[in-house]
Length: 263
Image (cartoon, rainbow, N blue to C red; front, top):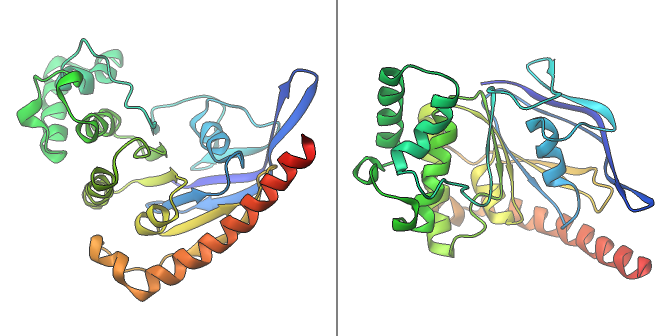
């Protein structure tokens, strides 16, 4: 587990002759072992922040750090799960999970043991010789999560990993993720448009403003753990969801007005 810190982060992109400021003066801290969700209107810079701490983007100003070390490039201490699983269709489940370990040069015996352990934890050992095309969407996303966890990163970065799934599968995957992380313990930054998902999963929800994205509000989620679908029926859950929805809606209206004015 590791501490993730953003300090005065600003990021600008050049679009033709214009400079677009995606995020501005973002400062936040995710404590070790904390599950943090990031929500906000479209275009508020959620994915930009994730890409910065992943090392895919360099901030224009400010810094992102993991355990005090400034992030300037990708590293094995951070694992990223995207909306699309990104599996190699010509590799089996176990070969997909083993692929990054082979790239790192681990011994075959160590790879076999680690992959087997991870597949047991995510319930995919019976499908270890299946190909991605033979799996459901939820199962493919479990393979993607298993592939990242096999690297044993201190920080797990997740960019709308369940957005492409149907509602029932999505709910099951949310519970699966919580159960998995309770056993393994990771610092998590989770990007989502789904406010209920953000509150259900997180210890803390960061709400971003309309572009340029800033931290508009921070909501703690003191729901007891371990959580299950029954947690969504608690009055406290609905109180937090309602508050988050109100803030996100206000910022979404601002974003829409800004777009109309620019047009």
